[in-house]
Length: 255
Image (cartoon, rainbow, N blue to C red):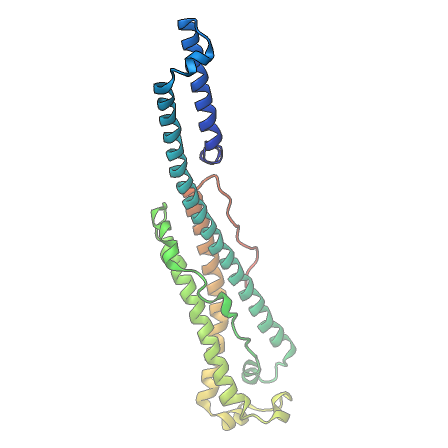
């Protein structure tokens, strides 16, 4: 209803003014028995009243227009957040799938070496902290104001995981890739003792524990992003029940 009124306010204003003017002229003509032209010459006060009505409707149109623009902006940003949550989950799903494929092609002879051979791609920087938290403050007026905290936490956790992966990759390149001979790196013929001798037990432990943490966080973060998505939709629908919002993508990371 608000959308209809806002869209056709100008047409309604002039239609009402025309109806008002016609009614006044018609009433005076009947009452005085004069013609329309004579009556138009004496309509100063009535036209002023009609002008007031049009001015009032114009002001109402401006107010409703600003309210409608505000609603549109909030709905658009809410859908933008939902879109980015979907993009982040899709990226995590692809990322996890890439790790699993690497595990599948490696042999099971050396579990430690197998974990060290996994290459981690760089996180997509466009997906790191894309949401402006200040623009989400309108959600504080919804039935679930805590959603602002959920959104902020999910984005910070995504950023932290991206930083953790970058740190892991730096360690892998500096302490493993540069120290393991190329002819052995892909032959899978190194023993645990040989690897420990070449790069040190501390580096082996750091690389293994880092990869294990990253894998576990991929699943945890996927679930967190999904929960945030669902809660945000509920909050937005509670505030704007007649508007449409982006649904979460199906599927997720493998456990």
